[in-house]
Length: 211
Image 1 (cartoon, one colour):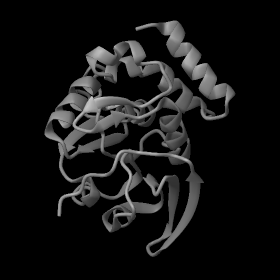
Image 2 (cartoon, one colour):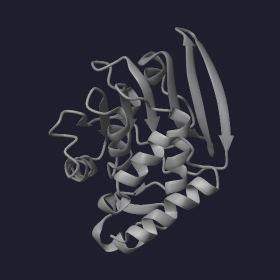
Image 3 (tube, rainbow, N blue to C red):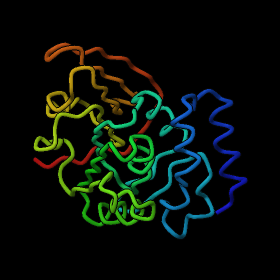
């Protein structure tokens, strides 16, 4: 761990306008990406690039995670679904933000990555405190038994918005996902009315769905 490199990365994201919200900035400072990178890539933990975590998946680029968190705008006490939780970094950031009265469900389809993410997040005591819960399942189906969610975020790209996510979002809730090389923010205005905002220029690993 190199705190000066971590601080430089965060300051760059702030100066370039990607990190804006104080509680999100604070989470980036407290939750160290170094703790979520696989061992042989630890020296690259503070590079602003995605890094492989095995099984064709990555820990996302810090810039991208910053943008997604700013679009999601998580709040203290909220219940959030993190689809494709992978390394657990975004799950831990969300746990730090929602706090002890909130809940974050990390859903990962690859069993080894689900275990990897849970182990990484456990270092911050979010699992033992009941703030984080990890579930190995097909994230495209959401978690109907845990709905409704204040926010849903997906780190894996798709060509469509899973209907399950739209149904499992609270009215007023926010959904952030990659789709067709863009990031999308979808706000649920009423049961059947959604507001869509597109932010182009992002590339993600594909969302793995079971038939």
